[in-house]
Length: 352
Image 1 (tube, helix red, strand yellow):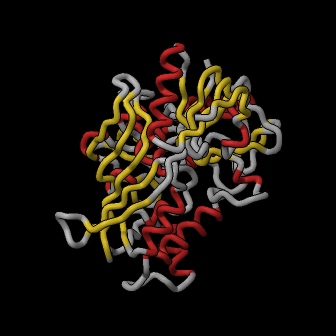
Image 2: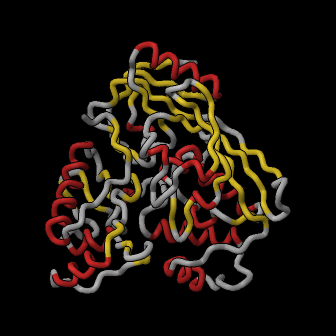
């Protein structure tokens, strides 16, 4: 286990923002994970687990503890013993997520094709219950293997034990900070049909004359990447809209009564999506724009993507404090206009 000191963290994040980690370790095996956890625990040092750096904002002061980068690799696939139409993939937590999606669609296995183009690592997907374009990883996860920092032992959870909900799991809620995910097992449907629920995706496929009963999983994944790129949500070198953490705010789930109050506020009827009995999901991007923050809005070196209102971006040499100042302006304006509090989606690291 190679321990580094005062390691800059900005290069490990898609935001390109953040100060140094006091100590830094790249864990290429489960033994490395256990050793690093013991090292930090014996010294009473705080530890943060880093994956692909795509869903976090690191403070300008950095992190005064140990940053453990999960770098476990490997993908194995085999037929499910209880089903001839499913395949089980066992994937190291440090594997690139989009690379795994590409592997699965090439194998003609359905279940995560609409999650193509999302940056980050496989180990981070169950933590946040990553989702987009009508799919969530919760529907494909079979089992999660992790190191328990309290019991200092490796444990495994079934999908039902992970507590999945919208952008939520036990790993980022009730048990936040307790587990280090080292492997995720996915159960995907062999020769399954693609998920084609979202209008943006349907339009893209139609524009390329690909939407039909014969549309392949590879074609759907490629179409998702085109949609994401059109919104600045695909990591492309030299694209300033890509220096972000993706969606900075979650789409709020509100009651039908709250939607009525929005109409009473004198704005047009908001777009909405069903979210259970008496509840709907509102697009945070719509709320933000209606509150006075258009695409391309800038506050110093921080700004809003020119292609997607949900993405706050580093326009050059933005600091973490500048990003948070912009986020605070947006939060305050949306709450004042609609009475709705937006929740931040990225993990904030090193802030007091």
